[in-house]
Image 1 (cartoon, rainbow, N blue to C red):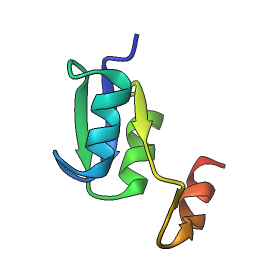
Image 2: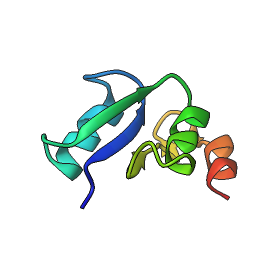
Image 3: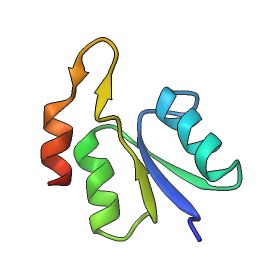
Image 4: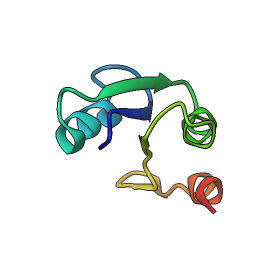
Length: 70
């Protein structure tokens, strides 16, 4: 069961909205300043899951984020 999720951004951001919609409103959200912090939260077992954009309609593929999950 997923009880905590890391996002890049703050409450109300797109990542937060996605986390709440996907995991439910009872999930604990860890707000991170960078995508590196999001990945570190998973690697250090601070959270059970993470939400991280890999592409968007303005910039297209976010190549650095692909590298983080490689």
